[in-house]
Image (tube, rainbow, N blue to C red; front, side):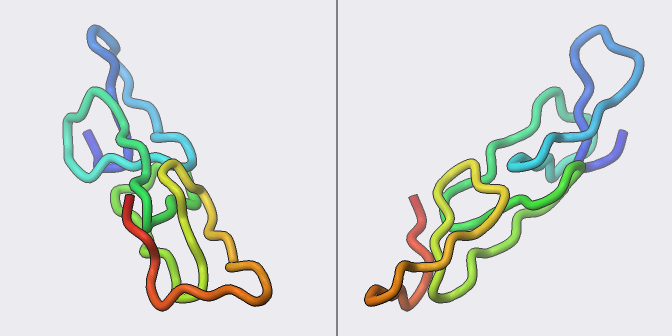
Length: 79
């Protein structure tokens, strides 16, 4: 079993974690939702990507969102 994949109970084959989720460990039965302050842009991820300065990433993000004009963030907000 590979990180970034999960295996349902009783299944013989593993599946890739979908976009906006990740699985950091081997032999997991479920993928984790990407937490706030991070994003998970690809399938089969075993890590999260930190939200860049000037953007925000709500929980479950597959991309980051740039702050609207006239606003700013010094760092991402962690939910």
